[in-house]
Length: 272
Image 1 (tube, rainbow, N blue to C red):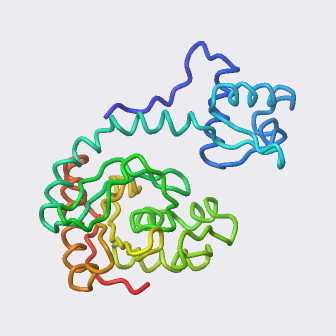
Image 2: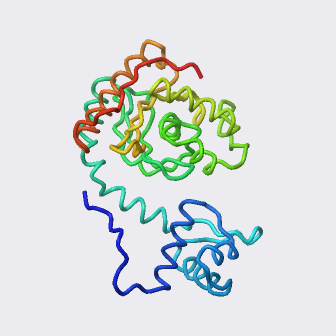
């Protein structure tokens, strides 16, 4: 993998530098006001407004006119998805996903974090006639699915609360977790068990288990999940799926980063 550049260019262009800093602020904070951008960049509010207006023009930001806040624009997703499709992780994961699907004969997916959502980047469908379909390319609220919860469980408390500053969460079904407090309680159990579970929280009648793919720095980069109709989601089946998914994650980690020391492989049952 190519190393990230950290040195300042010899001939830095101030306006470009400021615009890129705003993009980082948007990706980290989700919502920004002109006054906040001006203060953090130490520029006049008129300058901050011009920079934000240019980002809106190119689709990297959009403004909530009612609140006066700026949020990430559609170009963030478009460029992010294009990058994801060429990521090394997807190339390495495909044969592992196929082998996992063959082992459990249920739909297997690879997803990556995208703020409060996850992006499904690859999927191998079950051969069952009644099955969970492919979600490749879809953004889904992280709190409503197994892979999202598995990835959220890799965050620190500070990172989690920065991502979820409000208590209420959107409900997709009558089983969806609807408060940040309850979600945080679940994540503590997920960390202990080493896998996440979801049952009908995003789509009625579907369940999933998922295991996070943690890099050499302990950061959750992706998740491998197995999903199926709840009629086949028995405790016995889940135990088999968890073991198989953990084995698949271990193989993907080794392909990407070699054998990693200190990353425990948990096996357990979760009672959410």
